[in-house]
Amino acid sequence: MLAAMSTPSSSSPATPPAARTGGDACPGALRLHAADDGALARVRVPGGVLTVRQAGALAEAARRLGDGVLHLTSRGNVQLRGLAGGDACGTELAARLDAAGLLPSYAHERVRNIVASPLSGLDERGVRDVRPWLTGLDALLCGSATAAALSGRFLFALDDGRGDVASLGPDVTVRAAEDGRHALISPGTPAARLRVPYEDAPLAALTAAETFVEAARAQGGRVWRVAELRLDPDALTRTVAERLPDAEVVSGTAAAPLAEGPAPGRHPRALSAHAPFGRLSSAQWRELTAVAADAGSGELRLTPWRGAVVPVPGVSDAHAEELLARLAATGLITDPASPWPGVSACVGRPGCAKSLADVRADAERALGQGAYALPVHWSGCERRCGHPPGDRTDVVAAGDGTYRVSVVSDGTATPVSTFPIP
Image (tube, rainbow, N blue to C red; front, side, top):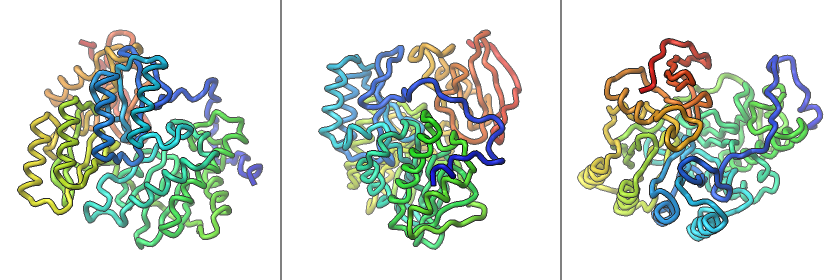
């Protein structure tokens, strides 16, 4: 089966993905990354869902071991920066996260990359609540020896039908079907998709990931994303279908993704706040956690758009407005008209040695001047770390002391201007 699946087709790219020469160095909670501002830990938070207790544990770890700031990633995970590094720091961090239930499996901590529709079950736009999928997939993932071989870059998306997280370039997309009784599974972005009963979606997603691991090994290893497989685009889907007795291969054009997250402000049963550049001070995080506790839900949901959603079921309008005002008072963005959600940047100087500029300071100045069409991503070097998917304005620091501005449309970048780095 895998031999047939690993045969390149005539539709494969003319130039196969370059073979990787090193191992997957993606940081985790147990594998720290050395940065200019100290060691960095990336804590996976499946679906971005944290209990108030877990949020408090992360804040305490950041305060005691790092710079005290919580940094949100484009996958709804949390980074701790400014860590001392070394065995003692790593051991204490692991113990703190483990005690809070944030490390259910040491072998799988870097592969628990799952994004989920943040407003699922909290408004009327989704077809079904994906929370059962989230808990089910995470448990199956942590119980699979094969899945432990996934790279730290492999991404699952659980979309409740609105198309938000389906836009994030996942390796395996699970999307609620319009009938509300089925899920559509897409490994990568093939034309063919699988339709499975709603309750079978977590197992189908895991099966797709395990099948990817086998195909990657057949290709010689060091393949981290589905798009890097040298396969017929639909071969992975067909192989997964053979392993799932109730799966049906369906064709046709998939519904277009929205490519947008929750707007800041009030939602029917939730509050949404955006953190500029994904950076939350200890005071902001503390108030966000307190608001989640006072709202009665006891949880908050971090989003891949560097924000947070606080469920407020049963809360009166007056109380919800009071809670939202508390978040705004800390400097978090709660105005739906704010341009801030359309601005992103890598960490830049002084946190990254490769960065050629303090991109965040420059991005904030440019935002005040309304300089560029949104969304816009600022990068300190050509790696463009953390850039959003889809169309955007790219502002990249170059070695000649200038920023180079280009417009990215349908995957093609068109240069438009340059200007000096301040």
